[in-house]
Image 1 (cartoon, rainbow over the protein chains, first blue to last red):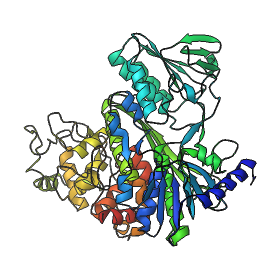
Image 2 (cartoon, each protein chain N blue to C red):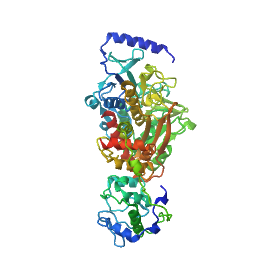
Image 3 (cartoon, rainbow over the protein chains, first blue to last red):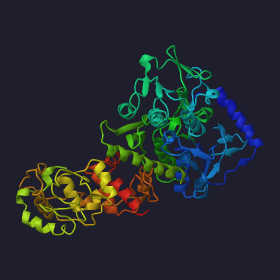
Image 4 (tube, chains in turn yellow, brown):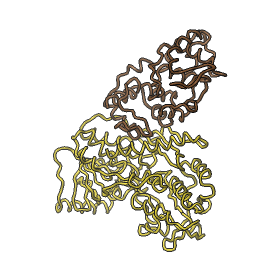
Length: 421
Length: 219
């Protein structure tokens, strides 16, 4: 392992913080600190608390008091769901599962002292640390865009106020205006997500602004469920959606937030709304903890999601580099259960079973036109490896597509109950 | 499932089948004057897409199976008659099933007379013995490990809710162990169709299915 300068300085600061700020003391029970209350972290915290029946002291660090799921946020944009339906709070995790929910930002990890420092000044010690922070954006990946431009050109790729902002901008578009999306390069959170979003934007525009256009600028040759989306777009939104792939300059893009322009391979397009989804990397705390590598993601062992950089740290979900699983809420939830079982085994001696992973992603193309893709995975010494999979087919009948959608609604209720109790 | 496991129809007795049909008659009719009653009419049953009789109100679970592509071929009719719940968990067909494979074969021989072109009924080997088309008793006898089931259940609870809500996705809580094992094996063997469930069940071992069944039966 390479000890870099930042890691060294970071640990020094954390050690100083231990002396000067209130410290939550370990009480004899082993303590697991979980950073991030999304599909990976909330699930891990809940399963650790539930299955250890109080034998493990679980601390969950999550800055937001109401968590908005990225999955189904596109359905809010499309007007299929209301905003409150994708918001969740942590009350049950605290009251029913005894989890110590701390609403604060984790700002550093001291791997030697095994402590997490918080923006509020506190430092919390751990026996095992689970880092599940989701994604952050790679600076400079879209020329002309940085976080200060996110009001003019929202990413809406972390759900919440950004999602509301994007929807409001689409609703305010002039008649016949243009919605542009700068799609991200691989790998990124939720592979079908940008294209489900395009579908839902088209659905909304078809109702309120049917002469509007959608322009996708995409650095990728191919994308997830491409055949299904393209079939659906020509069926439901004929003539509305245009995609510029890398063969026509989709990878050579610059945005100008001040003048609302998108420059594709030198050609300037004036647009009315621009959704910029930049290239992604592990949430910054994983980097600060020193568990990421040059790829920007955190490599983990497939059997238990343990970091390859530190024996007491586990990384879940989007932030991890684990092998074949897509970065999705379903994947994070699946990994969290394997991980919490492994941690319980290590800390309390409970039985450890072989890892099993699964993922299914549903996408909505139009009202009652849902499609899905899924796969099963196993742990090998090298990576999480795909063993089998399926994907919806083009030309399926309406009844099956409607059932897919209804199933996805059931899944949403299922996974959020699995995360938040 | 090989067709060969079904008893030879040539040996089957349509008249004996008509007698078995008496137990069905209170709800189903068949023949020239057949109409929908408590259950749908059974003319042209062989090869019929499940849930396809218009104006008949099917159960939610039957419609799920229908949307998944269930067609009433001989294998599925046989499974359904044997134990309706194993194929369609919350079917409205409140009927315990016909356990004896010979009775079922006779009944199907009777029913096929009212289907135009039951081409999917094979010519069976006359010497072929009747075997249980469904889950072998030895599989049903496997004792599950509840703790293992609890761990494995994590894969189920991403979609199926433990509070028993069944909006969009059926509830799997509190099932009889045998029903649960039978249903998962039906997906594993491809009798029941559903992309996610077939994928999930296919990689579960018989022990793992038994373990899940015990765990969910006691929730």
